[in-house]
Amino acid sequence: MADIKERIAKRVAKEIKDGYVLNLGIGLPTLVANYLPEGVDVTVHSENGFLGLGPAPDAGEEDTYLVNAGGQYVTILPGGMFFDSATSFGIIRGKHVDASILGALEVDEKGNLANWIVPGKMVPGMGGAMDLVVGAKRVIIAMTHTAKGSPKILKKCTLPLTAVGVVNEIVTEMGVIEVTSEGLVLTELHPDYTIEQVQAATEAELIISPNLKAMED
Image (cartoon, rainbow, N blue to C red; front, side, top):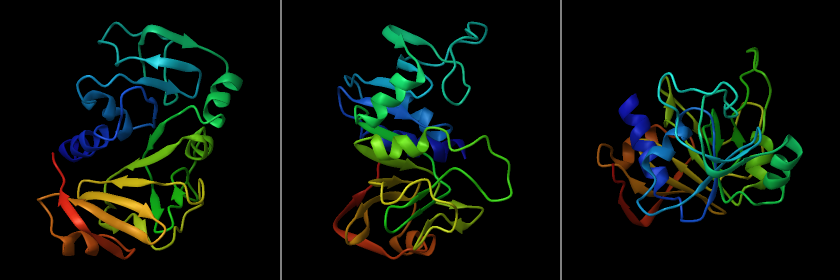
């Protein structure tokens, strides 16, 4: 599983451009920061009130006052800053976040996203996801293609939605899928899989790009 998550994070990192303000969701998306291309300078935002997040601190060097929105210890780079929630969500809602990278429970062929609750399970709430997927200029989903063998890319989401029609791109261990007005377009295929295997693991019908290329590790 670790190798799969790293594969996904490495591919997502290729989407990040120099100068981006970037928000990384809890879990797998946080790994993206480890694989940013050389020479790409980004400013990482955390909705609990930070700009300029750095890497995770070394063991024993944690500052209990510095945690990201997921409760993980972080560091702050030179020039980083702290502010209140009103300012933080003003940044998001003002569309100053270039890309938001999140995990998902389900995504469907219309770009609808469900990533915050499974009915019957206790969760603290939706958090900032609802604002981030609407306010960010680009929304990229970084997730495993299936959950215990069941498709996560569906014709229509079955779980409560986070937002409607917000997803631009889905990156899984199997490939890269663009969300378009015509449907879901498979643009990259990992060499470990065939088109037939990807379609079998996807409930929604995939459109195969005429320029389909190999997804790099």
